[in-house]
Each structure stands twice: as structure tokens, then as C-alpha cells.
Length: 114
Image 1 (tube, rainbow, N blue to C red):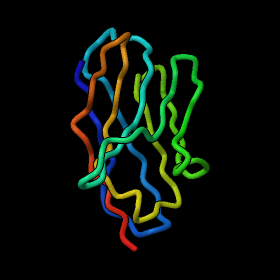
Image 2 (tube, rainbow, N blue to C red):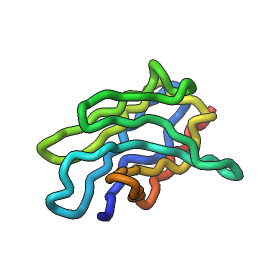
Image 3 (cartoon, one colour):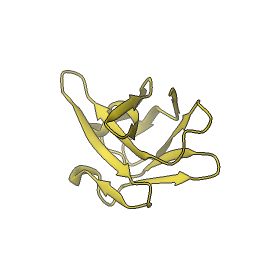
Image 4 (cartoon, rainbow, N blue to C red):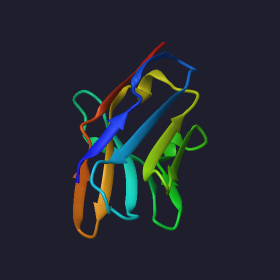
């Protein structure tokens, strides 16, 4: 399974961006999807996940600012990021979890300037 992530870019603090992630394979089905991020010199951390049921979970640092959602027809997962802060600057990775196997997108860079 290949994941196509897009939507990253440069934005000033307080601005918004929306990331998208779409599996390239057909018949992928509905899986747990997530967004992770990795800042320079730091480990990759969970940002948000959405279960097949639609239940969501967020890192404390993004609660109330980020929203994960999915379009079941397009099989696309979104991460709406509002009120962005410089500390949100990172490479964002899309994740699909199928059973015990994790699939990752190529990463999309988000840069937030102060």
C-alpha cells in the first residue's frame, strides 16, 4: 500500500493548512488512519488518529486546533490544522495501520513562521 500525502507548505503563525492522504492501492478498505510528525532532531510523534468507526484521538498539543477526518468514498484522510504555531513545524507523515502492519506516506513538510 502506498500513501500519497499532500498539503504541506509554509504559513505564518495563526494560519491554517489542510493535509490529505490517499492510499494508492484499490480495495484497501477502511483502516485506522493517522498523522504523525517529526521535527528536526526529534522522534516521530503521534498527532491524530481516526479509527474505522470514526472515533478520533489527538495529541494534547494539538487538541482544539487540529481535526482529523476521512472521506469514506474517496478513502482520503484529512488533517485540518488551524491556529498553527511555530512549534508545529515538522514533516508530517500519513499512517495506515492494517492489523500489525504500518504503512507510511512520504511525508509532507509544514513550516510555521513566527
